[in-house]
Length: 565
Length: 33
Image 1 (cartoon, rainbow over the protein chains, first blue to last red):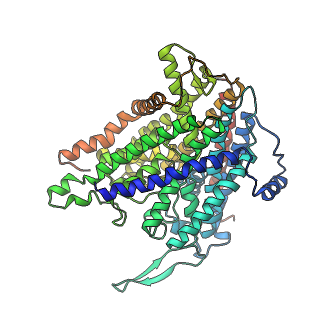
Image 2: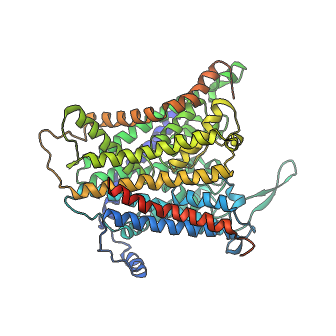
């Protein structure tokens, strides 16, 4: 580890934290209807869609609207991917995706996962990239933020059965938050050298005299929302490691900033919406402390290098550089690996499959605990609120009082719904991995034997269920088992988690808001922050430590004994 | 179109769309908890 490495990491995190707090205040104003600079456009959409913005929905109506819209968009995207050869903006004449790959890809982008079992520059037309994937990057991000807004409103309201209007939240989040930020970031990326062109591939002659086709396309705008919306699906197969997606040191700072600024901002927004900023900062601190600890862990693991290569006389001063861009090195690769898995982004600037076993374990663990520190846009906030409810429940058990969170009594129903949401993730990740690893098809997808092979499969199911989308890239993912199986995991990981959260919001909104009393457990101080971190780590450990012991931990100790896989 | 689309498309499209819509039934179950 070097001082320059720490300064690089520190600078990026400082830029994020400095921007997230005012952004949170702005987002609160947006979701409370106080921002109106695009009101004519907004009203135009409502008129076009026949939406009455003043009509509020209960949680079931809100969930139904959200699910119907996403189902319709799945169908639309599936049709686009299957029929792209007939659609405009296909200058390279790309053919249709296979039905099972189109299913996997459509589910992936509708659920904010962006798992890519294909190579973007070869399998997709420009039209599919723009109207298919980029549009769904906005839609899935706005869906997640809308669900998080509902959870925040549930604590702000007392004795009400309504939580807002899904169509209004979706429109306002897209118009006032995602679109302006994405346009600004896309312009900045173009200035950094990211292409935004409808021109076809260009032919270049290499120094050896070989002809090479260099793919390009409308990259910058997709890149911007890919990161801001914690989507992660790259225009190119190499994702943000590709010099056309992430050409300079400055673009890398911007891309890392984009991944985490909205999730941290949403924690600050939470405090504004519930009218107690300390509550938002408590969640903010939990997110920041766990994420920074993970950055330190991964940087330390990668900077130490591979002891087997060091024993052969390789200079270890640059750390483990397999699978990393020399221009980014170990510190920025470690930071990006954490920010992309602490959120549900899944973009990569280095190959996680090539990380040291202990370095690769942390991204996997961050996804498995639910990507809540700071988490995906929206999903991170409502995910950490689920853990906050469980934390006050645990605290209530310890002192024998009915737990409360933000003036709402947390009773059996909320705890059952929270546990349902949490257990769905574990069931998909561990169950899916166990089934896949025991089939000949699953074993045939692995690129490595032993514990590293298990890690590849475990990471795939964790990434899909957690709607992350990054991969231990050795896995051959375009097989019937993984295309269909991971599509189911993405669906359940997104909506089977979100629906109980919305049900919890409905239940909490209907309860009266109680004033704090002398016996109220303060949920903004260091004690609560420590408790919440403990609950997150203990629940994650209880569920996933056995699997991690068989994968990355076993690989680490095998490596120390001189054995690789 | 007939050369591109097949019965598998119908099955896959219905399964994916139906899978998301099935979550509405799941929401009804959550309501009973």
